[in-house]
Length: 236
Length: 293
Image 1 (tube, chains in turn cyan, green):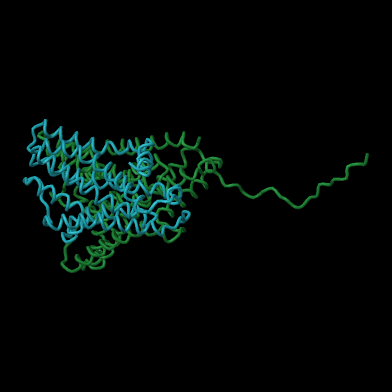
Image 2 (cartoon, rainbow over the protein chains, first blue to last red; image 1 turned 180 degrees about the vertical axis):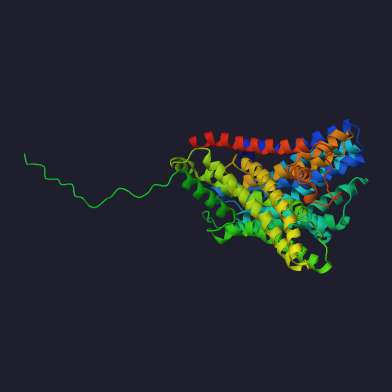
């Protein structure tokens, strides 16, 4: 593990702030256990819990907070200069940070989703959800990491994507679903464990190719942007 | 030993003898500044992007609804349904504005400067809260007014039509006020916990979004009582339920309401009041300590 990853991990977990991330997965598990123990049929509770809460809220929000935090926090308080002035190739800065963001997001999201999937249907659904959300964590993290280099307000721009593009437009205009990571995750999970509970709207090859494309594309973009990064004070 | 020769010259420094503005003026200035900050007025173009994006989308939707109504002759959404459907944008607006109002001051450590004025501890958060609530109310009420104008000019049966339309609009503006009060108090409380604007925005959205699926889950539980109380779990459905109970048919035509709350209307009203009061109390508590650092 490189020094950059250590610094990033300590930046994420060194403060009490990260405790704010915990309620999201806990609520997911509590709702799943509650529904299961009260004998509601999985057909009724699985869509709102697995998709409505897990894949549509917990995954993107955790990825947003962590993904913009790994680099954005350092840019915000100016300490990114310490890393940038070290004789490191830029990819050796971006890739460890992306790995940490993906890892933290994947663990935070995949574990409760596995538990919820297990309660809803089978261990296979749980594993499928965990695997698909790990893929989603990579894609989201790459996107939000690149955003934190493209703009000074990465969280708000990320929220525009999550809330307005995936949330609002995704429900109304079905064409936008082709460009929605959330739909890729649902489709992939449905492919790995075919059940009636998840309904993907895009085809499996599109989901797989687009997830890979987003992950790689935004990582390359981030590396490129960091190459000519200008350290400026906060305006506005 | 020579005599001291120093002289103190009077170079014209004067004390301020004009009128001194008191607590009310400070409060008013803080409120007005907060309201301007909410929409990025008096700030750089960058600060205007996100608030005006939301305002633009909401107004565009209202204009589109008005146009459709003028064409097909019947309303697609009532004013209250419009407010309900804009909930995602309201959440986003709170996430943009609330950190801008409170987190900036926390981060740059200017609170001691504020509190060195004749400004009681409680006035600062209350002024910010009122500013955010007003901004939210304008955000929801403005487009409703656009819809009202469109409907009034195309109603076709003269002053009576306009009057009927106005009677539809007024309860909805009250309802928008309820939205504003609940969302502003919860959002501002969450944002005041951290000085990092980015993190505050994420936390605000997490709090509001996380609660909506809880309602969805609770409303399919096998108990009827739990189903009817499920809307308590999320601020937006709480507001909707209180509106349905208190204003009822004035907001939504009979039988079209999304909220089947049974006989628990008063419970919802009490819960809404308690939620707002609790958030304000916590906010005041937070600001009793926060400036001491």
